[in-house]
Length: 383
Image (cartoon, rainbow, N blue to C red; front, side):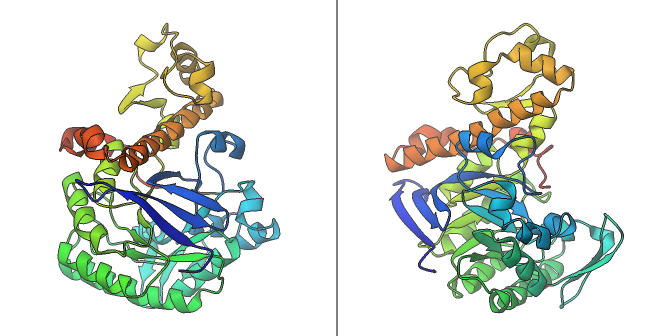
């Protein structure tokens, strides 16, 4: 790992593989485990950087695919790079764009060279290769950049998944060769679908490359939650313990707790802002639809224990009124609260690991509850 990137493990749970640590980056430390808000187009939807900082966010994400299409990496670079362009001084990560490109389905063509697809903005044919993805991310300037990978859908045959997993490794080798900046950490991504032996083989192969960090990708793409838990449980322990581990596109309470118990450090998901735009608040593990009549005359805060701006200044009745009126402020207040809620959840888990109380205090989240997880999955696909 580069001297400007390091991971320090501070404590481990005595009954699980959960761990608490610190990931050091050029723009500051990230205390793990940690939820990372998603700012796809160089903004976390409806929230200013100052408001975002108040939620406790330390590291946030943007997306290579979307920024390449609009406004273009050259404009971001002209604005001083991603941090300065969007006014965020903390650590940042850019996804490679692989997930978004492969979700285009009929609009793209995969080859060993890369992926050709038609821009949904202007119809232009774009050729996104591992080298081009890294070039774009080097230009954007985030602290952590992701390797370009092939994300197989669910369901897919073993043959299809094996081909995608092998190609992902070959593309990673090309990403490593193309990477030009020492102030950016390149993370590799473990693919393998729901086939645990392919996951294991991929994890072992990637670990030998001694990258600054590792991610588990290709989950939350439609597979049953139980399979996701099995994938993470089998894969995470095979990744180097001295490097950060990132589970991509996951952010419900239960799924994060289960993944943390397997040794995962970082998470991202669009659910806090997406649910906010549906008028939904996340309150201590429950989902509240603020359109419901019971909130119209409820003058208590969303959560009396929450320190966020929304809870400290407004009532459920007021936010319900804003939601019903389709006022933009509703989405801002709910986004602030929901982001704060998920970050607080991972902060509390971190504190419990440091005092070796994780299994006791969060054990109920580790129990199977497929119905709740199925409900959670309805709204939280990645942007």
